[in-house]
Each structure stands twice: as C-alpha cells, then as structure tokens.
Image 1 (cartoon, rainbow, N blue to C red):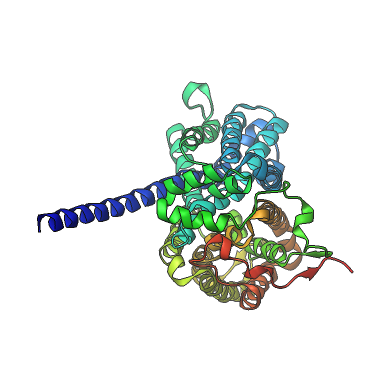
Image 2: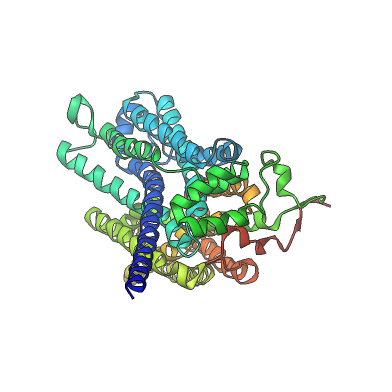
Length: 493
C-alpha cells in the first residue's frame, strides 16, 4: 500500500512537473514572440513619427511640398528594397541574424534623421530605416510562424500587426508630448536641439531595447533544420515545446531535406516547367490587395480630408485617436478568435464589411457639394462618411491587417518561404508607395467618389479571390500546409 501511495505521489509529481514544463515552454514561446514583435512596434513608430516633423523639415530643408515629397515617402521605397533584400539573405544568415541587422539599421536611421541638416542626408537615413522596416515586416512573421505551436500560431503572428498599431499610436502621442513641452516642433528642446529632431531620437530607446533583447532569443528551428543542423534544431524545439512535441516536429522536419542550395528565383517555378508556383501568385495578390483597398489613404490623408469637409483641427485630432483605438479593438478580436475560427472567415468578413462601408463613403462623396472657393461640403452626409470610414478601418484591422501577414507566413513551403515572403513584402511596400503617391492625382482627375469607387472594387474582387483560391490553414503544422500548390499558372507559353 505504501508503495502504491509512493508510486501515486511520484506520478502526480511527474504530472505536475509536466504541466509546469508545458506552461514554462508556453511562457518562453510567448516571450520570444513578444520580443520579435517589438520589431513591428518599430515599423509602426518609424512610419508614423514623420507626421509630427513637417514644420521642422520645412524650416531646415525649405521644401514647399515636404508633406507630399520624397522626404516623406522615401521610407516606403526603402521598405520595398528591404523586403526584397531580406529574400537574398534570410536563408544565408538566418531569421534572428536578419532581425539583429534590421535593429542596427533602425538605430542608425533614428539618430541620423534627427542630426542631419541635409535633405539628401535625411532621405538616405530614412531609406535606411525603410530598409530595416521592410526586413522586419518580412522576417518577423516568418520567425514567429516557425517557432509558434500550430494551435496558437495565428494569434502569435498577429502580435506583429498589433505592435504596428501600437507603434503608430505611440509615435503620435510621443510627438504630441514633445510639442507640448517645446511649444512648437521647431522650438529648441533638450541639448539645444529642436523638438522635431527629438521625435526621431525618441525611437532610439525602443530600438536599443529591441537590439538588446534579440540576443536572448533562439534561431528558428526550421531554419536550422533546413541548413542541416538537426541537433541544434532539436535543442531549440525542446526549449520551445518540450521533449515529446519536439520529437514529433523533428520527425516531420526530417522529411524536409536540408537545403541543397540557397533558394533562387528558379525555385519559384514548377519542376521542369515554365510555370510560376500558384502559391506565389496568390501571395502577391494578397499583398497587393491589402494596399489596393485604400487603407493607407485613410491613414495618410484622413486628417486633411476631414478638415476639408468642415471638421476643426481639434475634431480631426480626436478623430485620429478614435480611428487608432478602433484599429486596436478590431485587431484584439482577431487575436482572440483567429485560431478558433480560422483565417479565411476573418478575411471574407473583412472584405464584405469593407466593400459595404466603402460603398457608403462613395455614396456620401457622390452627394457632396462644392462651395464657391472649391471647398467640399458633405452637408447631412458628413457623419455617414466619418462613421463609415471608422467602421471600414475596424473591418480592415479585424481581417486584412493582421491576417494577411499570418497567411503569407504560413502558405509557403520551407524551401521558398524566405524568398516568397520577400517578394510578397516587396510588392506590398511598392503598392503602398503607389497608392500614397497616386491619390492626389486620382483625386484631381476623377474626384473623391470615383477614386474611392476604385478601392471599393478591389475589396469586392478580394471576396471572389478568397472564395475561389484561399484555403484554411488553422491548426496545421507548417509542413502539412501544401494545398496552395494545386493550380500552377503559366508564366509564358
């Protein structure tokens, strides 16, 4: 009897220890994902900080169109270059090493953008920062996808987009605090430097923290397995998921042979055929559509638009804050339910919601009148446009904002995941740039209603794409996701 009690106590202790180790591993996984997601925070902060520095840039560089010039949009082209470059090095240097390189670039960019007195120098520093955020936008979701348990992978990858939103909001709040302390962005603050320079230097604090913490996270076990270092991959998997699950994952990874060569563009073609893999076409379509829906037109030109239809400067500041909070609320819902409900339902609901709300915005603009001086007057439709725009932002943050990156990180096979994500990220940043630069032209040529009609058509098209070609990936291991390879598409005849 005593022996039975002893055995029972021993098994209870083992069970408790196993439960403890499972919890300990989950805490470690979440900690690693939070550290890597800090890169998303820096993406949001670095892209959003520029909005408070226009007066300072004008005072130094003397540009009459600084708010719409290359000084502002250089970071987007840098993002495209960074995303593309990440594809060249991610399978050579590794995921963690690329994150460290990007963190160093952000430190240099934040310091240089604040210290330079040359427009060319400023553009170069901002492009360097753009390269960093392009790398982070591609590598972070890959890294999280390759370390996260399949049952939590959706919400853990989604942390990156939540971090981007928090970074954007933090940049706005930081700029506002510095302006309130100095009086104006062009006034001197600490160390005899203007407030607008400190807006960039504030980013040094999270950038250095990110760089420091990256030295405490492991390399992706799937990258280690791909380069033939099975032992190191197994050790990392044990730290992440425990002994039993690590053995299961390693067994599947052994089916994926180590890299015989570093991935090239030829690997994106079907074996022996002049056909681009269907997974790449779908990924590029998802990346482009995320921007063609017009989300960044709302973010970039929202303040100018609402002031143009009669809202005061104070009102537009409040609207911007509300829009930011609505975005975060939508993303929170996604993080809670994405691994239960799946990726595809969120994308479909988001596309349908955005189609409806953009249609209401088009209707409001189509019924607008113009005053004697050309000012826009929405009349009784002003609140319809405002509410519809914020509901549109909610649907985007519920779906295409976080879920696109999740699906892109999951849908590629191991061998071409880095290269495929790089091309997708590059496409996203280039379309982002085109959308921002083209909006004033489209507005002048077609007007508000027709311009927003274009965006509405793209959201409607996305519904058809999702229903026909996109498959569900929830709760599958990365090695089991291969259904996107079913429909090869001819590159040329």
